[in-house]
Amino acid sequence: KMFSSLKGQTVIVTGASAGIGKAMALTFGREGCNVVCVARRKSALDEVVSLIEKDGGKALAIAADVSVFDDMKKVAKTTVDTFGSIDILLSNAGVIPQVPLSKMTDQDYDYVMNINVKGTFHAVWAVMEQMKMQRYGRIILTSSITGPITGYPGWAHYGASKAAQLGFMHTAAMELAPYGITVNAVSPGNVLTEGLESLGIEYVNSMCKSVPVGKLGTGFEIANGALFLAAKESWYINGHNLVIDGGQVLPECAGALELMRKDFEQENA
Image 1 (cartoon, one colour):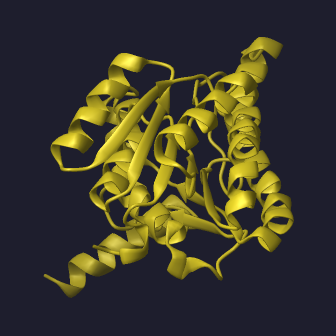
Image 2 (cartoon, rainbow, N blue to C red):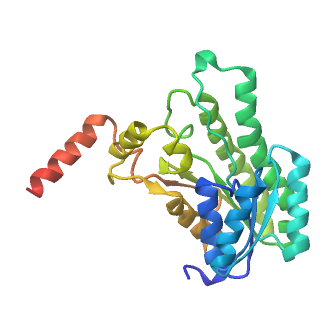
Image 3 (cartoon, rainbow, N blue to C red):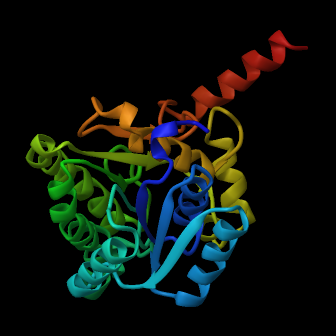
């Protein structure tokens, strides 16, 4: 096991039905956590719970919408009633629709902000009181390189939401620190998920070429970063954003990657 301190702890994972959230749920299940899987589709969650239980873990599925405050309060109450504590929150639920700025409507913008930003607030607020009572907690938000560091056409609203999460994190980390609660974030670059694959093989290939390591990570690479931040041993890391992107943000232009590969080929000819 990566960290013995995680065994027996209770973790809530929002957006656990697919992609990074599913990988997080499975990873924390393997570490011996009680995993509460949250998403809007119960049928997809049941599959994740089944996989965790098949691996010898304990899990529970709760259908809920992070943009609905009462839903997240229900999640927190059910978690405490079932497992007795809330030790870790992985606030991962998010949407990433692509809409050019010229065609973006209020509805498009509000839809993304309500889930990605307000959903983060709802999730944190819902678990906060229990964690304060425990004098212990680990909160990890799933942000992104898109917004805080980079931009991409069609994702102005998504980028704004991901930057907003980090702004929220900085103050939340300060307010909750006296209670033994840390608030951190993981910021994935492009990783191979169902969402990314739906954008087409050409997009996937172009993303592989844009990453210095030459291939895309999966949700499990992001989950391993969250695992580190969730451990008791990581108590001195607070208000930090861990970028997990295979070096995607490093090149200053496409030519830098071409030069990198050319130099590599020459040295290994």
